[in-house]
Length: 398
Image 1: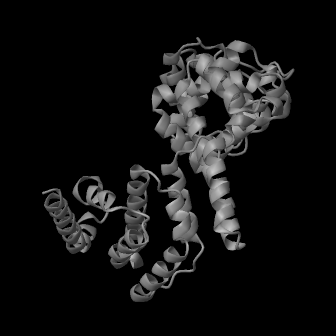
Image 2: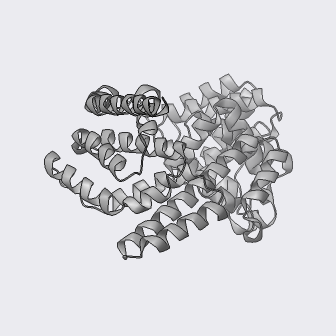
């Protein structure tokens, strides 16, 4: 049975318990587990977390309130090392696993603490950053809490990027950059990291230098990939708009060639974007026999665009791989693959060399057996035609 207590009694009970358990964090975890049965954690969650982090109730801005009920045994007074921070992370982990209703309150507490960074000492900020990184790595927190770091005042004073360095180092050391990237993408934070800096410094070059100099090159590389991905999405959107508005192929090709120069995009990347744009223009039929007809008509019409960005053998191969991937991912296209490739060959978008290379060694695993079987007769025909051509050349030579 839970005995509800009033606020001062709650605060005194938690502080007294922490004073008794001292620096023994296992004892702290046991005390918190046991006390949840008699103290009203649900009602006083913010007070509980304030005490565990700062030793007492926090006033707006981050200073300890005038209330003298406080303890010297808390996160902010603990040693600034990874081992201790991991032990504190376990305290919070056990507490929230035991009392699930504290999850939301804990996330709100961390968001609040991040907004109070200016009121904490450098050492306190470092410990909070390390702890937050470990909790993010363990899945105890959502990466959405990082939105607090985009606060204008924190950004202007340079506290946001400095805190982020400690946090990401802690997070990446527990997991890896791929895990971090997945967590950021899940909550739409992957494209917002530039907001750690003032508007006049929100460039990839500045971001890269800052985090690379701080020993976080993997985060810089991630940001570069995100920037490239964002640019590709914008380019695809623009190409689709131009196509749907009936802009001439000549103008679209000129625009695409200019983008290749301006944005340092490879032709292989560009043909992938053009393919996706062309295929996104159509509302595809759900019937296999009809969708094949649709696809052939659409690709024949847009073949000048595809041809303009397949001037290299590698670009032709890239296009074939994109076609394979598309036909595999869109089940109604599974039987259309061979006919699409045949059309691309007829309109001279892809060469026999590219098709033979795709068939013999460069195909993807996706739908491999189905697509290779579809292409078998055509490939045999290509090989025979090639042999006959060679034989004729030898005869002419004689």
